[in-house]
Image (cartoon, rainbow over the protein chains, first blue to last red):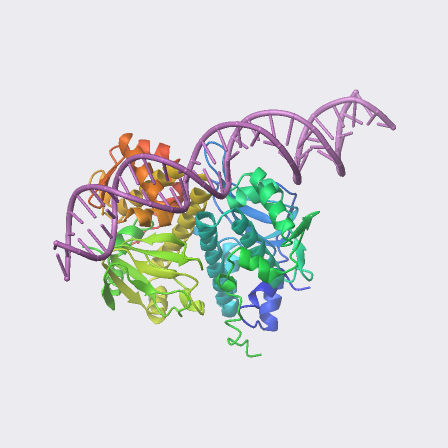
Length: 246
Length: 246
DNA sequence: CGAGCGATTGATCATAATCAAGCGATGTGG
DNA sequence: CCACATCGCTTGATTATGATCAATCGCTCG
């Protein structure tokens, strides 16, 4: 099967067979397997490669001096950390795995060569980077304005949509390999309150959640509860007109 | 005087005289003047140019359906909205002015030509884009983990540091052209609570604030209160070693 | 002068945090 | 194989932070 990154980028543009085999090549070189709950790179370290998640979930996070922790974003298969990180002298946050993970390390040289030889891929990666920035903005909105129920509902909608676009949903269900503590760290809520809010969502029939699997019986309804507007994911095939012309 | 963008980018790399005159040229073509409280571009519209703020303050913001509003980031002189916005079919948020503002519109063609002819500028702009992303992440942390006092203290430290690096502070003071409502929209707090938290900060001698001017008598102290670690601004002259070699 | 805006204050309410305890499943070492 | 520890989840009681509602005040501007 094609790597998740290919599936994701095809939501933006049609890729040629050559584009696809280049992406497959990049996703199969320098692959690392990491266990759950391990850091990929830590705050203060010098970034040396771009990491591409092939399987499993990871996250960006940051600790405050007094131990409070915020998860800043989730990385799922097909996600790539900042294209140009090399430019920075050191990381201002950490990246850690949430599940067992396979990642491909991409060097600056590989990326540059690919950008020159496959401009359509480069263009698609910029689209992906802009979408990642939009997701980060949406998290700002969620943490600033939404209450607990809305935040969880919104997060579940986002996760479901992102997984669906890389083909990892099955019907109305998707994996959700997060503990309630991790959900709390991502939404800025205590795990106790997460627990109670999840019960509310379950009681209202908006979600089912057990054994690391999330079922959303009525996505439209959950979207309404979370005031979720998917436009920020820019998945409306906007670039499908940019044809791969062969 | 050099445009703010030039001053900012020189925190990353040394620019040659040619680089600087190119930046000055770009900042003086297609300049628009806008009054306070007007939209530069609205959600759903198609982005056509990159906006560079020359003078005044603007912000990104987003409204929820029910009227709640979150300010997502501030634009000050020298700030540039996403380099590659052209790629997106429509905006997922709005940009509006906070004060009277002068902005330069930069076309995709101008940017591309500049990137080819002045690679050092392009590199510096990518650094700037990475810093903007880091600021956005830090806002996520602030809204998720910090209490009201910490959020305001942190925001003031960030604003002060950003203004200082473009030469817009005077000693321990800087402009702060924001109403308490706007501070609330940025920090996810009600304006009533902003008012009370400001009084706390004033009472503790951490800030003075009136007539749109902020004084920070002891920046170190305010940083401690806001758990502010400036590393995310990547201002430690990291690229000064990248010489302009003439 | 009156309108409107921004700042301020007081009173009350709501959301979510914190503290504490217990439960069930899993895994491990004696 | 059992005892025990750990982890994730759950529940109850209490507390705290910040929201909301309402009113007032000073200032600027038309």
